[in-house]
Amino acid sequence: MKIPTPDRGIRLPDLDKAIDAYRKSLALDPRSLGSLERIAAIMSARGETAKAVKTIEEHLPKLENPLDQATCYRLMGQHLMQANELSDAESKLTTAIKTEPREMSSYLLLANVQLRREMREQAIATLKKSLEVNANFLNAHIELGVLERQQNPAQAAEHFKAALDIAPRRAT
Image 1 (cartoon, rainbow, N blue to C red):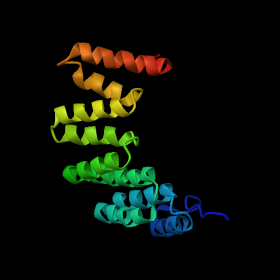
Image 2: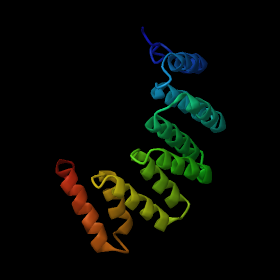
Image 3: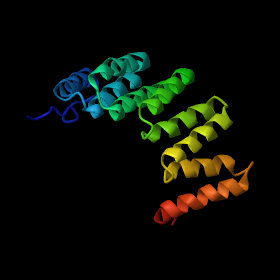
Image 4: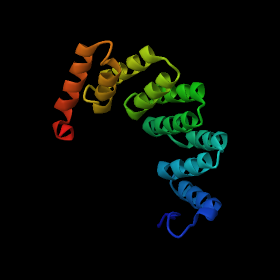
């Protein structure tokens, strides 16, 4: 069975057609989170963040896998963050982490929201929590190194060293 691929041949004025094609793809395979993500992205780009979040929320009951559910919460958090609805974004990202703690990108997004809300210590705590889940989470080490370099240079150096140990080729 061939799943529709709306990216081919659809021009910008045809975004409603793209949404329809992505919805068909989603109906064929509810785990096609890429289609859901594209629907929400189109809606957000149109300034319809609330509609994008609602679309994702309505899809959640169709998903049984905690990782898929956490991905949906992360997507909602991302769209809310882009719309500068930071309190709601924080709530969705916190739910993503509670739903599936191994969904690592949610930690980075949550820390970013916390920093934008001037909650530096909570952002650091969020990133440290991510390292409890995955000690080799490169981006958390880098972000912690950046955040701690002025107030705690020794700790920052440890995080930068850990990042180099995890991915030595990226540093060159």
